[in-house]
Length: 293
Image 1: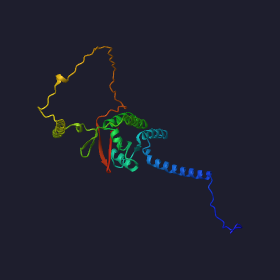
Image 2: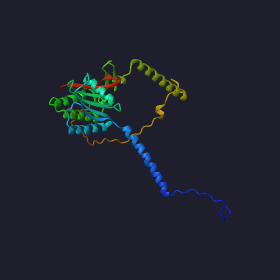
Image 3: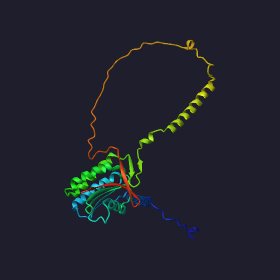
Image 4: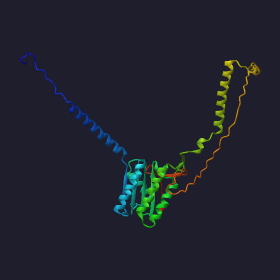
């Protein structure tokens, strides 16, 4: 009890506006760090150059890494470049597929392989890349790559295949269907047969149309009591005709024509058509193709 006869009251320490502001800013920064970290983890893709066969110089590896990083950023891909002297008894296809399965982080990706053991270049596709790199497009990539690998220009072989791929990705998906190599089953992406109407469907549609139209017609007749043969419209009494001046004015006729060049093909050709052949490795679906050298 103090001199006034009252018990002292404990007053909590007041927080100044600046202290509150610091706390709010600290909380905001903490949340931002968490969100940024989550986005980084979510957006992370595998981008690697593994020159196991020692075919590339350090500067060539760096240049290829930058190239596949740009390709990866286009649609969020795992992109891998691999060379090997030892395919471990696998074919180039199986070696590339197993390597992809051992390193991938998302389903969408592409792997480029120079296999010195089997003397093949191989492209392995997964996920959405199966639709972008159709069989025909892969053949074009391999054609362009072969021109360089036959001269032992290994970095240039990878570069031209990567550039072709980037061009196809920018052009859009090219597959109308994909075919399972193991079962022979074809799955259409844009199936032209889906637009056709069968005879049975046509009969059902006709019957439904007749019922709907007939019901509407009977409803109108019933509402206005317009029984067949019981109503006649006196057009002579009720018609009215007014004629006004009419003139036709011919102005001009302009026709504009332009020449539309045909596609010249090449690595930038992104037209649709054709399909992708798929196979299974380790329960995962892959597309791809190889070329001996």
